[in-house]
Amino acid sequence: MSTTQASEPDGAVSLMPRHVGVVMDGNRRWARRARLSSASEGHRRGADHIEDLLRWCDDRRIEHLTVYVLSADNIRKRSSAEIGFLFGLVTDVLPTLITRAGTWSLHVTGDTGLLPERAAESLRRAEEQTADRPSHLTLAIGYDGREDIVAGIRRAVREGALDPLHELEPDAITSRLSGGPVKEIDLVIRTSGEQRLSGFCPWQTAHAEVHVSDRLWPDFGEQDFDAALAQFHAASERARRHG
Image (tube, rainbow, N blue to C red; front, side, top):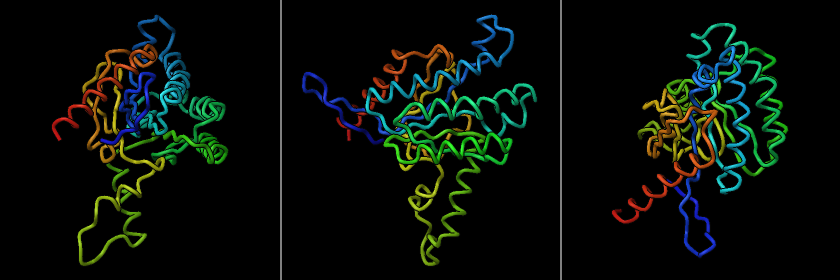
């Protein structure tokens, strides 16, 4: 569990996670509860809400963020109409809001071969346009956690990180996983009350604190975000006291 240290007005030190992961769940249930005509309206609200999340991280000097947008299983199992709408968000909405966010560079992890070419190209273009920015946002799209690990091992083998006389070091795999420059995730936030990670970054979250919020993702607010950070802070304090 790694932290960044930010000074509070009274001189106290606030322990903050260096890298936050978010499993943003509950868009469809939010749309049903709001009596909207389709789940797509919930997905649109959920996508727009990522912009709020980026601002909250900016305000708290959290510079590494990974958001679970769409799993490979989602692409294969959900209706063609729903997936088509989600592909539209990936193509037109997410790259635009990240580009205008100003401080965030985009990284993508997952199998973009599962996406329409227009969506994959839109993400590649946004990655290029934002490449020099100081903060790092990774979007997990077409993502499968086991495949992510396998891909990291393949890169390590291909790049000669395997010493025939020794076992492969875990750091050699970690450094070759896709996404932003800081791989290990310190805090995972899961919305909608579900008590599972759904295959979200299993290697990177091995030592992460997990915060489950009952809020559906579109209703997840800044105070809820601070509650997750407070849980992380408390866990960090316990670890410091007890070694």
